[in-house]
Amino acid sequence: MDSLGSLSVFVRAGEARSFTVAGQQLGISSSAVSKAIVRLEERLGVRLFHRSTRTVSLTPEGALFLERCRRILCEVAAAETELSQTQSAPRGKLRISLPSIGALFMARLADFKRLYPEVELDIDCSDRLVEVIEEGFDAVIRTGEPSDSRLMTRAIGSYRMVVVGSPEYFRREGVPVQPEDLARHACLIFRFPTTGKLQVWPLRRAGQAIDIERPASMVTNTLEPQVCFAEQGLGIACVPDIAIRRQLDEGTLVTVLDDYNQDCTTLRILWPSSRHLSPKLRVFVDFIAGSLLPREGGSVNDARAKPAPKPAGT
Image (cartoon, rainbow, N blue to C red):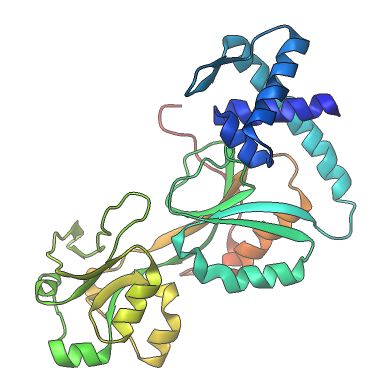
């Protein structure tokens, strides 16, 4: 078991190319990772990493050993999964990553936690493109088309970005009837926290994106201020329709420019491909796919898991 522990530390360090990151994932110090690697190298009689003051990288022998260790640990995990499936309840830590709109899903995640109290949720909310396997995530929820052939994927729903304002704002400032009219309005703009770039509003004419002037009345890197300011009659925002269902139903926000905005975005759950899903991951995938979001044109329960496509050129 000590050997398996050393192999696990080595695999995390080899995939992350960092003793510090490996330590963070394993919950130990970077020095503990370094000492475990040194002991492993001494036992094997071979150097596994090139080390410098700033970086670590695998030696050719280390790269070869990494592939074999991955297979060994995968078999061990499969054996553990087969045994754990005999347990009555899913349990253990489940590390998941959600996009920045993930706060909208927290009520459903709370329902999942109530159903499976022995599953410990470790939640990361970020728009950055995480490395699912290398960073040790069990599952991630993301938009767009997956490209990593090592992952399984399942569609869980879709949403549309809508341009909205309050009825009071439109009575006071007028209703924009074409995208160019936005140049005369106060716009509430979202800035992506990971890149600093301003969100492009998905407005199109005859299938072509429209380059529009949007005077920024307010810029924010979270969703809530946009919704709040729009409801208070302070401007126009472009937000996911799933974020403002209550406001749309109650009439505190109304949509405009719908004829220029028909694009839908698909949400997917992705997880590392494996012959055996652990009970905690299996129930999480099924729960999320069955209850997180309604899909246009059908039920989320119609979705089926499939491998992510291989990247172009492979």
